[in-house]
Length: 185
Figure 1 (cartoon, rainbow, N blue to C red):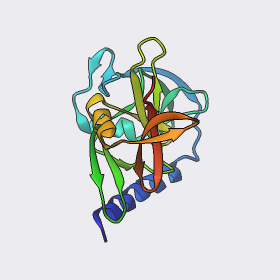
Figure 2: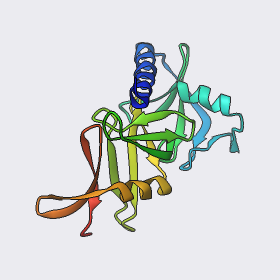
Figure 3: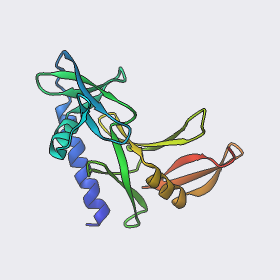
């Protein structure tokens, strides 16, 4: 079994456990003063949560619902939290070649995700500054913001392609091409 196959099996197992947990729907208990900053730091009542094990526990019950809000869901409670941008940050990128070219991202919490049709990369551009804001779909309707260094690695791996008469830059992972943006803008 290749390294990619092993990673994909781990991701599949993680997502299966997550899907199995989704049926409960506790009623909203209110807001809790937890905020996830743009850099992925979790705060409680204005102070950073320093225990990584606690952050990972909270992250394991984090969901984004159809209303666009983020909640910590336990069997008994549903508490709304604030998220400045995305709840996770992709901090590392590895390009795997076997058994097929794939992009493996690692988040700030050490979880891995492979870009594919179920975990697409998308790039938004700030209308005022033109700065890219790249994301990868992670799990449970959640995304990871791709940090600047990782995005620059993606751009290095990029290959030009033409779409609607315009020149774009894209990357391919597991047979799916992701558009990183128009090179003419």
